[in-house]
Image (cartoon, rainbow, N blue to C red; front, side, top):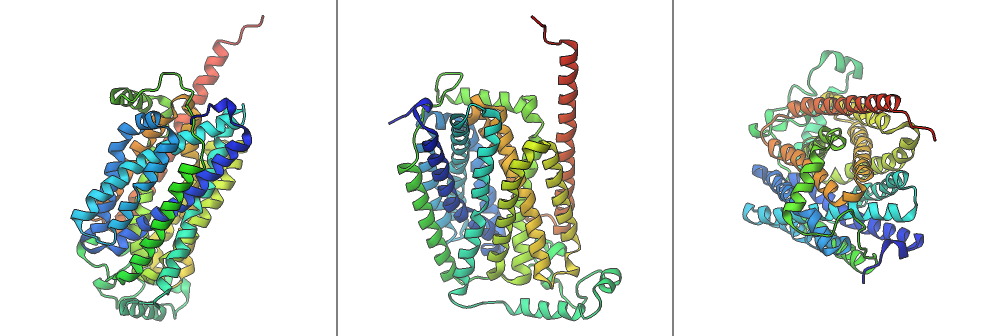
Length: 475
């Protein structure tokens, strides 16, 4: 039974927010960890990366239908059904063949686009219902939601570590040999190594290269084989999480009739028209490069960093620790930046995120000198998580705040640009050397952030000039 916004108390709104956030942490911990591990589990011939590129190709196409689908079936139903459709994608990783992985990845991406759009619209509705101060409340609600969702890698990382520990460690001989070689290098003073040595060890062969010197197409990535029984345990646990999350969405959350500026319609042409209008809107254009970069850097982190810096160097069984560190720092920045933004403005928060990622990229470029210290790589992962939490919280909050009456189509537009960045990152990862990826990622971060700052200054100048030329008439 549908319930109008005016009849739902604040208590019910908070219940809906807690339910949505709780279901998302179960569901997204499953998806995030499989996404981050897929390129490592299925690294042979780049099958995992091709699967992820296909996933976000489906994600991109669904953006055309997502807004109309949410308006037709209601956000609650769209969220519940889309969460269930993520399960086939998880199971496809148990049989990593292209004819299995690609179609199920496409289905998972298609439905996840609807899931994100419906969740964003539902959060905007909650923020409008809780308080009459809609503009400020949107950021707070998205900050709380992003905080909870950012904790999902922590749960996923812990469960991954536990699954790998069930049958003992299976560290490859390659890793131990490389570890000994690098330890021998660090018998010298660290500063001396940093000044006079260009590589972590001159004795390492091409097949033993990790980090910034990896070129995937040169086939110099070591074996990352994982016992299938451990993969089955992880997939079974994550499937159970998905089922619980879907049940929470369906049986606990309230439905609502969106109060929009036009009648509810499911015509695709209407959806496409609204998406195009938003894409050309100057408010959206201002964050267009940042949204594309946000998708690209997510693809870099899950498709390259965890495989070529973590799995390659420390072993696949250690990835869970890095996922937890990433999730913790992302959750911390999501919570803190939401409150800081109200005092400083969004521009300063984005500047901090940009500087953090540039420092992390610089740290990855000199990683060879410190790769024997796992804490150094964890620190890089945590820095990236700080920036990721800010992008996730404030890009979604900005869109929800700017387009409250067309939130479904606004989030469809956001997902459309985001998916283009993700597809670009995953599909190019098989053909670009790691060092080149780092330069491209750092450059994109700086350019997109500067574009946002320049556009913001122009908007401020125009609005100030307009207010001075046409002052409000006194009665």
